[in-house]
Length: 486
Image 1 (cartoon, rainbow, N blue to C red):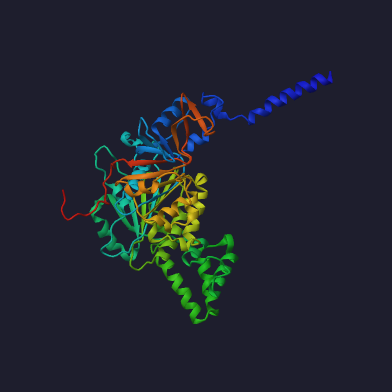
Image 2 (cartoon, rainbow, N blue to C red):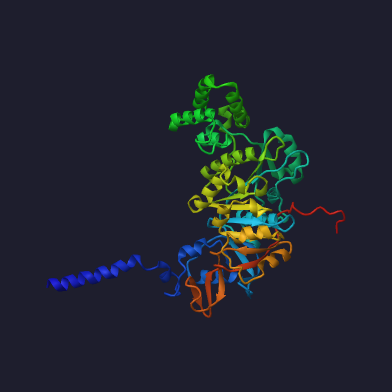
């Protein structure tokens, strides 16, 4: 009797144990046990071909918002090329991802970045896809400054080229010392772009903000007066306030020598110059910097600001952006990164912040896009972590070598570099290992597949594609200036 009871218990245990081992996707998709794509793979794929999208939506409860990025001209697996029946290529705006977009000036790099932003900020316009809930956007921009400056090209999203398109509101925050100049720079965009001085409230300047502006990498390498500042911050701990910190700092200044005082004042002056001069009571009525469906641009083009100072301010803004409660996803664009990022400054505060952000992007609902002419300025670890690489035309072998050491695509038997050199304006080579497409089924070549007749839905893996970015629905401010116009 006991033996039969034990057998029954064993049988029950064996059947229930499988409940947590079976993949739920096998039961939901209706494709069967050969399906190796989980629901997570489907939900988070950064790019999808139209054919893959059709099959996924037919065989599973797949709800997402997506944007039309461009046309897939061809897909390469080593030297073999495939073409698609439906060339449409979608970008998944519902899930976090990170991307690097590079190429020489005039290759279409900024056009592609603006196209992605259109897909994330402009709802209810079917020619560019489906956007149920607009995201919140932030662009970091830095230039030389002065009257000869140009506006950030992302600001042109404020000007739609069709009455059917509702362009997103754009707010530009600039250095207060160049406010009048920058308002003239952005004047050609009309009153759809609001240019304001960048000021921080005292409540926004936490201990990390001071360390960012003072470029403190570690306490071991910091000078003596910085050791004292670190000690004050540690003592205050969770009781930190700007007033309490400044009061303690004034007391500590008494033991500083003239050289230390000079160094301290030099580092503090930039931060204090960005403090909001308005009374605290009036600051409460200010509009938030970040909002759903809004594009916020931090343009620190100022002849009085160098790249290191801009990076410190960007780092503060980045923390505020991450903390902002906007009830939607977020997209960060590191624009013209070659002007302030550097591989030699790989341990800088901004680089570390970007690295941490990309590593936690899924938990922070963040999409990170790094746009640069020169990919060698991007620290290798950032390249390693990016889920998408969009390579517009360039001709430097050193740039190519730098990239292929940090991407997954198999270029061993191909002439991919020749393709990069010959790319037309607006065309790009796209690398996205976790993107989904339709491929001819070859038994044993890929376990992560979803069989559909003689073809499969599978990850791109080590394949790469050649894409042509779609036309924009907002104004293009990056067109080349010609002597004779057609």
